[in-house]
Structure formats: C-alpha cells, structure tokens
Length: 236
Image (cartoon, rainbow, N blue to C red):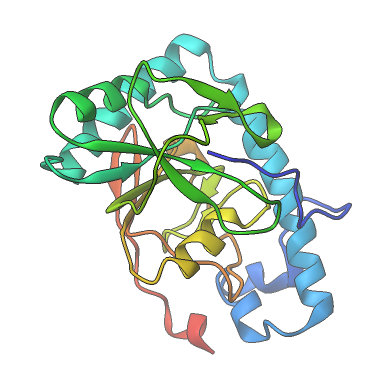
C-alpha cells in the first residue's frame, strides 16, 4: 500500500470528539459534517487513534503477527473465491501490516493477476500496476516497493486494503492521506473491497466523513467482519 504522512493530522487528543460518544459514537460527524470545528476535532482524534493503533500493532510479537497473517490470508483467499481471470489489487506490507506475499504467490499460481498500488502524485488517486512474484520492484513514494513504470496499468476486480483500524460498519481508518477513498471514488465502477487487519484494530467508529467509503467486509485472524447496519441515529 502507498502510505501518506498524515495529511489530515493536526496536534490532538485521544478522547472521542464532540462528546457524542456519550450517546451514539457513530452519530457525531454525520450529524453535521460541514462544521469546520467538528471536522478539526475528528481529525485530531483520528491522528491520536492512528498513532495508538500502529503502536499496538507493532507491539504484537513478530511470530504472532506472522501466525495472524497466515490465518488472515487463508480466510481472505476463501472469501475472494476462484481467482482464475481476476485481477486482485493488493499492497506491500508496511509497519506491521499482515504480510500477504504467500497469498500473492498462490493467486499467481491459480491463474489470477496481481496488481499493486502506486502513488504517482501526492493527494491524488492511486493507479494499480500489474505485478508477478519475482518481477522487479522499485521504491515509490515513502520508499514502499511498487511495480516499475514499464508494468501495465490495470483495473482490479478485487481490492484488498490494509487497515489501521476499522469499525462496525466497515469504514476504514488508514494513514490519513485518503488515497484509497480517492481511488475507489474515481474508478467509475465498484470492485469488491476487502479490508485486512488484526481483530484488535476493531473500534466502535472511525467517525466517518462524507468522503469515507465503507468496505464490503474486513478480514481478521478471527474471521470475516461484515458491516453492521447503521442505527437510526447514524443517519440524522
């Protein structure tokens, strides 16, 4: 995955914004998404939550993360189903994310096509380039390996996005750059979208903003988390 340097970050605090956690934690942002002060509060909260979640993830012993990753990718493989003829957009593991590389090899062996995301310009949508295990990679923005410029650009049928955290409605907290949201919004079609992360990254809400797009499901080492319908207050 191509990761940003917290474009939405401002110095902040770890408590939930707007005091709406005292009623329904999913209601705050949707109640008045145009309120600049409210948005600032949410961005501060997201920055603190992001830092906390990444620290907790990195604190998981490496052998346990490896075992979790194997379990996650096995469950994900079943959720995707037959990959023959499919293009599956993945990510390159970063900062303790579940390592998908053994699954990439299986997808390639089973007739699927792998794509990896590339950030061409900051604050713009990503593109996906085809890649096969063993092919050359180069350092992209933030030094994350990406396919070379000679690799063809493709349109994934399935996109797998790592999460820093996720909520009951399968909204994703990422690194703050909004790259996946921009990319999905600009595709012109809707691929299947799976988040992947550790079960410990599930939180009550990410306080979704109007630009946030929910995933179809999130896969953890404990199984598949499907979105829970919004409570009536969420839609106010």
